Image 1 (cartoon, rainbow, N blue to C red):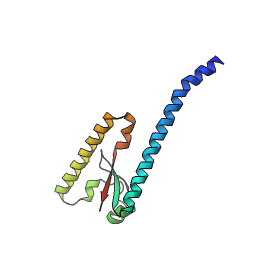
Image 2 (spheres, helix red, strand yellow):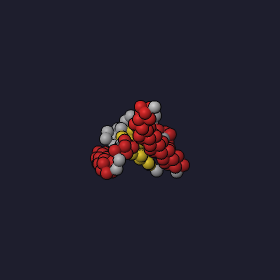
Image 3 (spheres, rainbow, N blue to C red):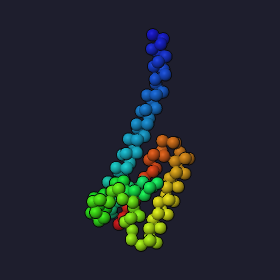
Length: 123
């Protein structure tokens, strides 16, 4: 009986950590869905962008209606025509990425995954 009790005592912190991690990701997903629903209700188009690569990871129906159905997977800067605007957009992505990296390093390490994408809204 003593070995079973000792095993349960060792297993308990692992189970608690798994539950806390699952609830963190569940809350992050719920907030992301809430933001997307809120943005969809404003009539604006939005997309999710990987901050490190600039690649569009997801896009609202309004965004794909405007830029075309193949927009997911493209680099966000490819959607801009003027080179000056491309440079400004690339700088925005870099600055946002650095800000997210700084926020992630000052918070829990598990937050860093949630800060690698950026929601961009157009009106």
